[in-house]
Image (tube, rainbow, N blue to C red; front, side, top):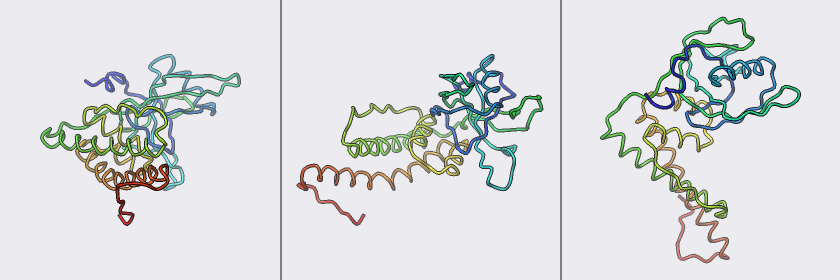
Length: 234
């Protein structure tokens, strides 16, 4: 059992916080809690697991009132919490395991509670998976290096370590400002190969443009002198 599933072991009924965003495993999410029902939720989970569920929910779509049963979300573990005198809170959460919402549970609480089933990706052929993960990591590191150059190389370039394929796929997904529907698709798939394949396509499309931009930025800093010819029509 993974560390993520160990954190949620024994949890069947999960308090839910519907938001117009998608939380991924290991992704950090700061939140400002001000509604009374979610203040109550924080107090309740603090007595137990300190975990609640973040379910992607856009109330403007399809006129639905709450996340649909069968939808996928991610458990959020509260790591830091600062309560203000008026009862509002600033919290820092980290995504844990994914869940599928089976049904809603009537508890009498002012917030939603779901009957959930936690899951991870299915086991897949490592002969296909591992080389694909290596390709995605190499592309991702090139994008990160180009972004560092574009920032003026402020600070130290982060030592990006390659994770196992599944957590790597979520790390790369979290690094991009993807629109919520695409991010949700990457969250709900149980195939690491499928997720990495989609990310590879995004990275291949992005890396050349970013490296060219980084080179142009470098030339601009040296008054336009460069030994490298750049194809601006790419």
